Length: 483
Image (cartoon, rainbow, N blue to C red):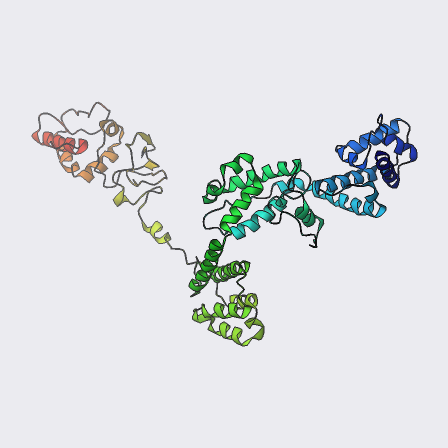
């Protein structure tokens, strides 16, 4: 039996283009050591190349075509084993060889794009209001882009039929591989755990996680986890609920006119979405009925003419998509409203350096003025403060103290002000006149300065009652006291 298998294997090598010396060397335990065609699958990624190099080093010629065909044989054997099919050397005929070579070339191209597939976005997390039937399809589509350890798309793990239908016709080899890949063995166990990790990450924060048993979680059984979810959310109760919700949504959908948050496109999209849900549950709605409902729920007077055109056009009456597209051409799109013109306010308001109008800026910002720059006092708030344009804006105000400031001014600040600046503040407080009278009457007396700060206002003497009265009045207003 072993001899017959060896001879069949050597026959397959001959069809690959190996000479008799090469065939004997490949099956020689000291060189190749391959005893059957199944052993070819044990060669690693570069195993065929290394084997042929050893033969050439032993002065046994091996053509490039023979080496490439042996690589095709390795691919064919691995595919048969991963699908649970028999591997016989006699089956590796010239016709099979050509077919396998083409598939191998396609597989190599697919492997080059495997990294791109790894970056495919995962589905959104499963939520309570998500239709599981739709989510099942989304998951199947996503796993179809992820390749398992044997090169088969991972959606074979969650396929509905455990055993393939022998009479089924498949549109591609990939579809066939998904349908017939064995649901047991080391490759399946590896892929099954990977699929479980994906499923768990999508359901652990939602209601579906409560249906995963501790045993399934410990075993990391992705297929069983998905079967549990499919059995729960796919039962008759949930299916009927989805059908009722779809019909209810269709009843409540209306289009009155174009709104920013609900356009005609949104209206058609919602209709289509719910019709598709019904169709998935074998609740088929005819195209004529869809068109009638489409027109019936439109109450925008501007579309009456377009609606009438749909009613009398035989093509539109039996084509929901065409009717919707025709109606959409009559929709007047929303336009942006005119922006408010605030330039006149900005020009006419008495603002300083980006601050508020003078009438609202008497407190000069958030903090005390602590820095003098070119006659301007910069506040500790968001922008420079000035006593002319003393708003709370971000810009640095400029100018003199000619507004209606009556707030507290510290003696330190007062000492740094010019005569003109002080006069402006005194004018605002109503105290300048009295002080000037005192100054006129006391011109012959030496001036006293306030706080020794080098000021130029000669106002207070101890000999004049009028001066004393003016000084007390200034002191009360400057320091916020009552007197």
